[in-house]
Length: 363
Image (cartoon, rainbow, N blue to C red; front, side, top):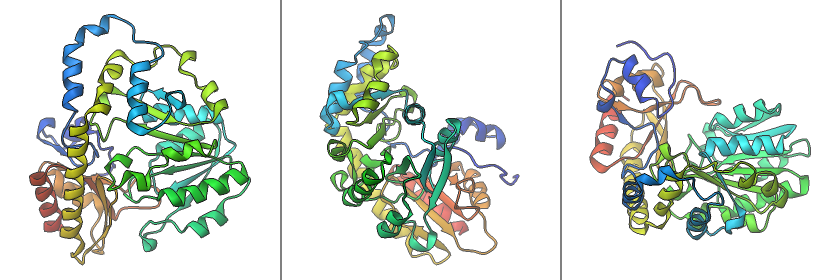
């Protein structure tokens, strides 16, 4: 089998299937970071029951959807901004703020840098280190902040490191950013997977800081990337006015609005949290004793691994796994990582056993 020359997004199953001459349905996507339980049963039934709703325009104010999100995350409905997925909200935030200079905590999702550069922003990265387990030293980080930055971007929990800042740490950062007049964008796409969301999420801090916007999505936790629904939370009145959904009517489709009942599916939510917490502990325990890899203790629903064998690369491990129908993430294209890092997400127990055993066979 040919050696992989490119890194792929976790959703690139069609591309991978063609490259490796495989049936797409035969590939298990361990690189996608999507909830293995699939879509919420409540959302599934609501979509089936309301298929004819496509004939009508959705409520331009999305009152029902915003109410469901508000009840779910504890943010006021008038502090919510709806978007066509997190990617849309990242672009919207950068276009609205148009910062001259942006600081991004890395290694992280490349779309932040791309969106910043598209609006002409100069981009600096605050690169976390393998030797520090990709964890941030708050005192050192605060010293790196200065008045030249107009925007700070943090993914929390971070992709691909699966590390998270606590709410208290974020509070300290926000306080300093307020003093320096730095706006802060925090992407909480993976926060619902953590053990204790109240220990990590900064949603409540939007009531304290007007220089803060939180981004969230239904793509990962609710396994609904095709719905293209994301939401942002901020108390900044100028930002809310500039991005009012009323300025672009019907920017969320009817089915995304209908599927909002997923936020009320408590059984599904609790089942997901229980599954991920159990599997995260088992996987970390199974991998961390192997001396030929370094496993970074995960907080989200995926784990980052560094390959320690001198001759071994991420593309080699990717090839070995894909031959068996398992698509992991080769992290070579992440700035600050390189060819020694792989990542995979947590699936159902048997699937997790399969990927852990497969990786242990080659590392």
